[in-house]
Amino acid sequence: MKLIDQSIRNYHTVMVVIVMALVVGVLCFQTLPRQLAPTVDKPEIEVKTEYLGLSPDEVERNITRRLEDQLESVEGMKKMTSTSQHGLSISTLFTLFLVPVLISLLIDMGFHTRKEDLVKDLLQAAPDSVPTAT
Image (cartoon, rainbow, N blue to C red; front, side, top):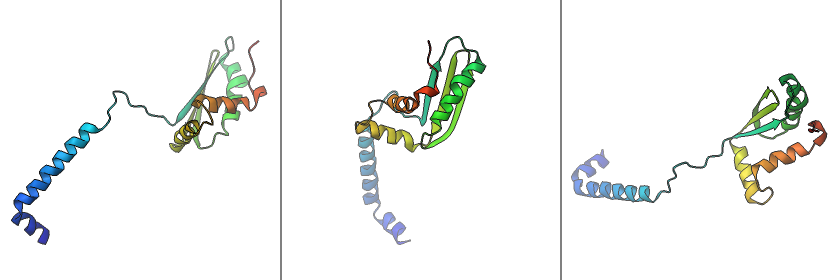
């Protein structure tokens, strides 16, 4: 109750503090950087593999399953979904939120130049697991 009593007695001081807080808030808001489309790293990695001429069953057997076996070793993966279509395999890895941050740190530290390089290095670890087009 003492705070309320003091605020009522010192009405002008309270009003000056409120106005100063509003001015500082408006100035800070104006200096905040704003982007029309901010850059956001989604916690997912998508691998698309195209192999023309294969049926969905062949794509699943020859490409999708082998990619899943290779990609399931990604640390921090929460879930993986795969889709097989005529001549196309799409595997999506949903990772924990921290994984894209760690990937960005590795890129900043010079270990990799792009996020795609991380997945490429992982897939090149077992080159015989995915068939090549002839």
